[in-house]
Image 1 (cartoon, one colour):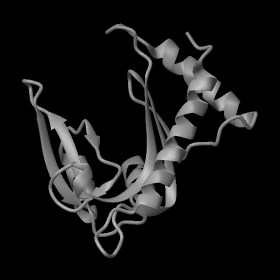
Image 2: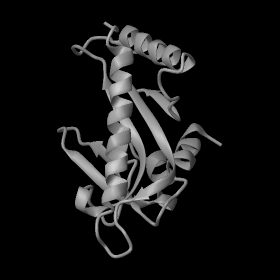
Image 3: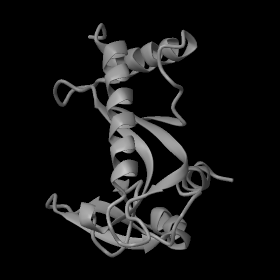
Length: 166
């Protein structure tokens, strides 16, 4: 199994027949989005020079909160660059600070930590996705509030760990 296949398997294990948005940027810097169902993602990822794929599933072809079908993970994007220069040292320092905090029990170990080239992407993947809507069509307020609380708590923990990083 390739790294891409492992990523897809881990991230989208509890698919609810959702659509996922994949995006790349044109030479002019304009976003070009494509929508795909789970079975289409490996080929799309393989054949496109993508900048990102959404972690949450959507009902339709748009990446809007009103179209969200399921929440699969908490994603934290740590931008560690101060300018357009090389930030490898800062990324490495932050990675080790997070690794040490995990070993000391200060933060929960993420499922994935990826060097984005300008920082770190940290993923906490839910064992079961959180449905954005209930069967009656109303928003799953309790689930959404729980997600936001978890997201805030994880972000604050990471910020605390990294406050002494340069």
